[in-house]
Image (cartoon, rainbow, N blue to C red; front, side, top):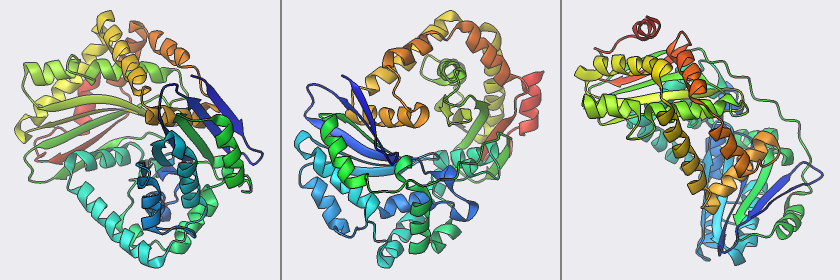
Length: 420
């Protein structure tokens, strides 16, 4: 398998990886335009635009878009994150060209029919309502808002209902003009693909686009704070977050290994101490995510209101203990889990195409997988203990609570417990 990258004169990039033996391919375009690229009055528009992508173009109706891909047994979808929006398809080898043609049509020729906007507005408002009715979804939006208050990166991707109710065709077209330039797009494909053929097709479809000067995303500042929502639910939902390195920082790998050892699986400290030994919850985990200039290590658990105080205190105690007695065996196990997750995921052309796009977006190239594995292997027990000490110390924290949480400790109490 080999990775090939070509950049057109206007900045449009094509990255591919041929995977021998496959009869299918994953192909998509990743646009560096997500939630953190929105102004306050635009919050939610990147996600709205993603929905409108499938509602018709100058050459295809919404039904024709779906039929073009599904008539050949393929699959097409999209997603919006805080740093990008992706439009992708999975098709058989013979239909790679068709897949790219449909995606290009979606991006280059949207019509933003007012009737379709109204229809999709209702769908998105239902999606927002569903998220608000799903405690272990909405709590992470509140946590993000507390971690990065009054910043684009802290706002919900779905947006506020008031914004969604106001967006029109001009707003959508304006966001495309601002953020959908050729130098903000990456065509990524993996599986049964031929790089030269895709480059030639991309030249026909995208080479006429003029480069655009896009405003850089506002830098992120982790501040922290507490969001508490009392409601009569069966469970109390608890989420705690601390700033961790961005994905360009070598410390990113240390933070990942730490969160896996702390709460990444059934053998992790939090799972064993909080669930298996104390029976304080059914679900508890830790995870680390990263952005260009910041990251966040998050702990989540769901428990009864009566057990919430004990769970929160025990979680902080386990974080403190990790700073002093995290063992080489735990670190080795976490490294193995991280490597296995990475390598197993790359057996899928969809995961591989997404990684290619992400690496080009971050580094401008695709580092060899062996280099990434080596960085994971280079994380030492000492590195993890130093990071654990930072997290367990006086670093700012964000907390979100939802449900029967009247008995939960306030964030200041947990902070005091961390440094005691």
